[in-house]
Amino acid sequence: PGGEEAEPLLACDLRFAEPDLPVGRPLRTYSSHAGLGALEHARLLEEHGPNECSVPPPDVRALLLRQLLAPMTIVQFATALLWCLDADPGRALMGILSALSFEATAALASYRSALAVHQLFRPPPPLLVLREGAWVRARAQTLVPADVFSLRAGAPVPCDALL
Image (cartoon, rainbow, N blue to C red):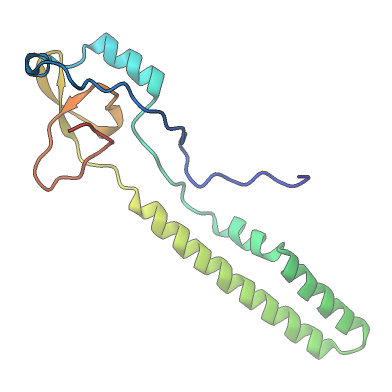
């Protein structure tokens, strides 16, 4: 109320809905599946968007500015100003320097944490996807609901999937 909107942590849409999963059908339905055609894949990619979710890299200046504009920091600066008016510039300088060093340390810690989270999101390696009856190499970002893809033992699963 009356303030800025919070920045989203993730640069993706986090709406979840239960998908219509192709379960309970006869086995021949699954074994005869030829994969998605180009038009159906393009339609689903347009409807659902790319299969990606990323955390933007942090901006150290924005983090520092946010720390410096925090209410407690402003109170510390106001106290230092009052000490200046009380003819105690040494105490005021010490208060300002300690507040600046503390807030810079806190901003640096936030930056390192955000950078570590950003580096966790590495794109998965290309994988084999069944499209129009043939296995083709594709990026995980192009996967859509109803795609059939191949997994190797120990390989990361590049999306939510029905196994």
